[in-house]
Amino acid sequence: MTKKIIDAPEDKFTEASVLSAMMNSNDVATRMAGTLRRDDFYEPMHRLIFDAVLNCINTKQEVSEVNIANILTKNNQLAAAGGRAGLGEIELLMPSAERLERDIRILCELSRRRMFIELLRNAAKEATNYTTTIEDIQGKLERALKDLPQPPESKIRFSPEVLLAMLSKLREYQDSTDKLLGIPSGFASLDDYLSGFRKKSLYILAGTTGSGKSALVTNMALYASGLGKKVLFYSLEMPSDQIAERMTFSMAQVPVHRGKSKKLSLDELQKITTAVDNISMRVIGFCDQGGTTVSDICHEVKQYPETDILIVDYLQLVKPLTRHQNREQEVAEISRTLKLLAMEMKIPVIALSQLNRNAEGRDDKKPKLTDIRESSAICNDANVVMMLHRELMENQTEAELFIRKNREGPMGAIKLRFVPEYTTFYDYNQN
Image (cartoon, rainbow, N blue to C red; front, side, top):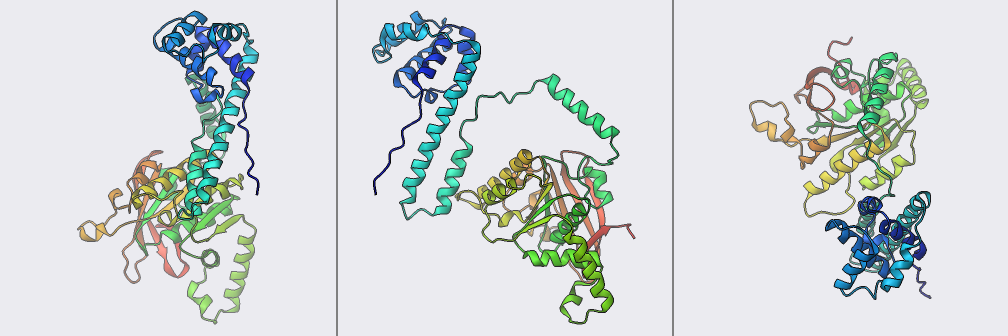
């Protein structure tokens, strides 16, 4: 098979045009020095000239043909940079302001394309090394793609714009009929602390095995979907049909074990049928695929931009983009990626997390932030950390939910009531 060599995309005239603008204006040169990189210029002589421009700026010299030529001469690079005649030709190009902005965008786009081609070449080369897994190659490539320089558009927002946007949101909230800033949790006592699950936020719901954290988040998902919210539910511990079963029996108020007894009454069967019809009308997407990576989650969620809330059960079962030397680094990468996903998609993300057994050796069994398994980075990334505590004994229906971290309001604790036969939590004083 004949190998095809992909030519690197470049535009020498555009490169020269941008350099001309820098050579004719100290202000433009200073501004471009903070925007452009040496590798944005493909032509070697243009890279030398750009280096000389940066030298002028760093040594507080005027950016001019004379000073650039002197620097190149001192470094024995003048001939390689086209000589004084070449510098003079570039200086005379003098693009208009409108042309310059266009040329800068073209320059950066061509540079990004060259980097993209190089990344693909490296990935293709690694793919021929059979000691490297496809998953590792994919993860490395995705990380590298994330690090590609972004187009030169300022992301800085100055105080007037930020303050006006804040004031607009505040007035919109005050004038709206909504009582909360985010999606209601289904638990009034919790919403008093959180004001609902807010956009661009990562929520951690932690608990020990058997505490009921999956049941609690399932209740929250069911409530949100009932409000017309579109829910994506990644259940990496429990099959999707079991989650659907829990939702159905919880809504029908039929004990879950009855479904396995072959002794359902006609009344119970009717309740279940009604619940199925109700839930079927809602938008709840399930994924229980084993081996799901955090990259898989990001890719799939972006295919459903109408998503209102994302749930991941649970964080330690998600695979990272790439393998690390220790599991703590991997979990830190996963939590950080989920936080960035929440911000990019402008949705709340609720991720469940396991707790270690440290509390069992303490007199005070109530969970603390340090009990979160494998990574303190989870707490750093999260906007809110909730910790579920329930004594695992027969007929124990009381539970406490501790808000151990809350960037969006006060910390505290609420009491919940758990009905095991329905796998359903309620506010403690709710009938």
